[in-house]
Image 1 (cartoon, rainbow, N blue to C red):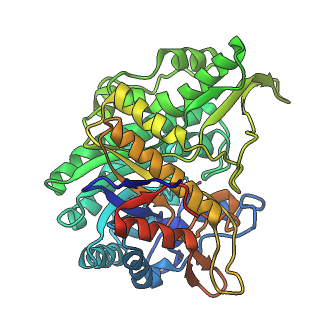
Image 2 (cartoon, rainbow, N blue to C red):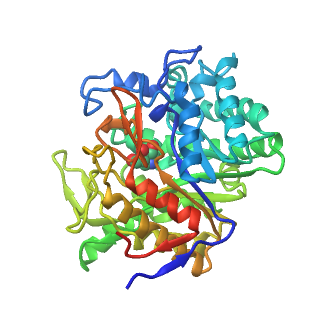
Length: 455
Ligand code: IFM
């Protein structure tokens, strides 16, 4: 028998995107080059050989996209500003046309009664700053403060939810250790420096937001993944703890005043990566109080003990799960979302939490009836919305949920092969089609009722 749960009153329901993934127009109106423009030119870097030059053409089609959000009955929209659109060289001369674009977007959102949540950095660093060392150089912190000042001065009267940085782990590790993301580097030393400078930039950015956007809420967004050992063995449990340290605690602990976790510090030091980049006052700045924590949750990690790889380096191998997988190969595990929210609330006590990203890649295309029948995505959403309600029932101060993503878009190193959208995009024609899952979500939001076991 199907059961129905009421949505909590006052909760914000939205969808999320990021600038490089949807805007296109990378050479228009004075936008500077970003590290992703550069990486896309590298043969083999992007699975389908594509780039972000047109993406969803949102730079021109934003009024249509805003109309889609209204049609879906969303309350809020999380988007990011492209740093190189606003400061083409990273610092210095401001590109007014870039700022004008975001001003039009924000005004349009407010007119449509959609609350903007603005992310200042979602990975499209100006290449000019990368040429000076990027996130691995401490100078980036001052550059981020300057950029934050420019954007918050212009939009601080209208935007009242600010995210400094999206997913520091991805910036540091995917960009500087694994090399699958821009700037495509492979060096743990650089990764750890980058992680520290990202956190420090966040900490230094928050007071700038507060100064220029009175009454605003400021926070950071982390990707979090609960870590499970593949077996009960001592070695697997240690590996799961190590992975938890890398992806979760390395960011949560310093943000909430605990400093970097001692077990990971020791592990990195033993591998020859001293944390000599931490200067007096940094940890206090990083733990500057914020108004909320944004949690991006997609799946859990199942971890086996390190095995030597070709270079004889220990490596953490996330276990491929047997149950249902999305096109990304990520397990559908909604219990992990409520568990993560409860864990963060219990351990770190952020005043408010948002699920700032959650969603699934499934490649369904429009059928002969013109509709996109994406039942697996609907089921994914149902499970994860229900997990949010479980967290609220357990006393977690969860204030909103943003589905990833409003549109099918440029999924980084996967190019356009991974479709996370509530709305299907035909990248050849730019035609948008609302998927069945989005129609279902829209019904849930309008009725304020979440039916369980729906079909
Ligand atoms: O598309 C990304 C997004 O940019 C950041 N969080 C994870 C999403 C899915 O991989």
